[in-house]
Length: 424
Ligand SMILES: [Zn+2]
Image (cartoon, rainbow, N blue to C red; front, side, top):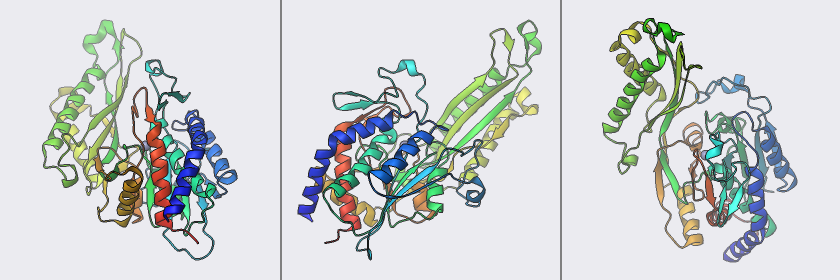
């Protein structure tokens, strides 16, 4: 095995420039929500022509998926936005365990673009860093998992079990892409997702819900502003209430996986829209909120709790007590998740990480969510995230450390050899 590993590591070194170029190519697709079609076409083509995988490219069907409790209803269409699955099928009886390597291609908006030092869609390299929207989260991880396999192929190794590559959409808003691939039957004995948490394995993550609040007012010209009701001012009442809610949930006893985290649960006001003219009182104000909560809690329970909290605040305000805001839960309704530290998947990862890096593998509980919840909770597939080092995801000047991308590539290759086994 040692000799095989050496050969694969050397192949990864030889392919490094190509890997960097591949990552730049991925980074130049502006694959925000609704715009994943082009990158998925490129990935499907790469899976089929370069990796020689069996490719299944399909558009998620809300009708069939909605029968699954983890499906989240959406306000948009899936037309032209496929999920791509590529399978490296082993020949003969499996001698190891099958593996899913999953990545999402959707990225969040790069706005405000003018705040970036490097164009978000140009994948600029400066020293050891590559800059761009989605480079860290998580196109670098995708390049790493693909080139781990390229290294194995290049070294002429035949694997003992199937490796399934899943290139999904909507990790950033629903998780329906991950669900669609698994519901379609593309399952395995374990899954790794190279989300960029700095060469650490994720052992717990929070749950997340989204909420939209529409506050009504009475619009008017400002000369009659005394008779109008400004919904922006009324939204302020609710912003204060949400701030108190965040304080309240963080004052409760912490979940054991998050005891060392100073502030595990975030309530984020992500958007606020109202008005279109300085001299008009707007008639409506809409805000969108993201709320985190601990594993083992039903998202529906949090939705109820948040709704009651907001309504309580409304009763304290004369206008809001009779003109109640409209509350709509949309997007994420994601449970928190944990993976048992004794899980063989984690032990194998710890072993290969130590082998490649010479240091112990650290684990982390994250205050965000990833697609691992769908594997762990809905399909009982052991799963974790392990990916490169970087900064600025969902912010400006997002970058990845290229050295860490090479490290992740090597760790994934060693993991695949160990987990899937090798045919002699
Ligand atoms: Zn991500």
